[in-house]
View 1 (tube, rainbow, N blue to C red):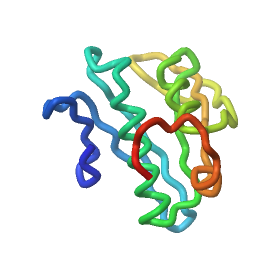
View 2 (spheres, rainbow, N blue to C red; view 1 turned 90 degrees about the vertical axis):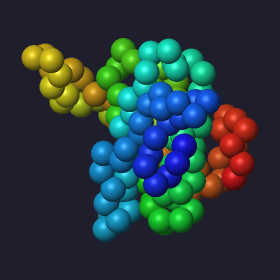
View 3 (tube, one colour; view 1 turned 120 degrees about the horizontal axis):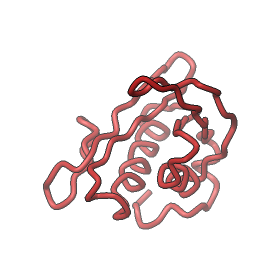
View 4 (spheres, rainbow, N blue to C red; view 1 turned 30 degrees about the vertical axis):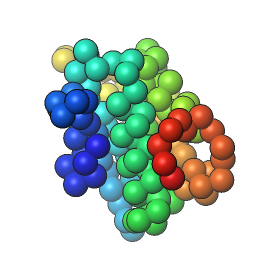
Length: 127
């Protein structure tokens, strides 16, 4: 992932993106959003990109908290949050409008001090 454009690449092909939905230095918090091509699912690019982004926002920008939002039935997204060491904090009922419907949203989070200290299943990304 190139941190300057938040693009997820696989074999030099763009397969997804992970822009910050919010980046509030005043409160020290960020919230990611993710999109991924169907053919890239299950190969780890989202987890790898998220780890690098967390490293950057925690180590370089001094952010204190990272949030991850997902709809409850998106098990792949929930699994990424768990692999990153995040904790499910809340469900926001009917909070996400999409395609004429409203969906619940789960809020997962990770305080920076837990990122720095918890072993977690963070895989092979160098820290």
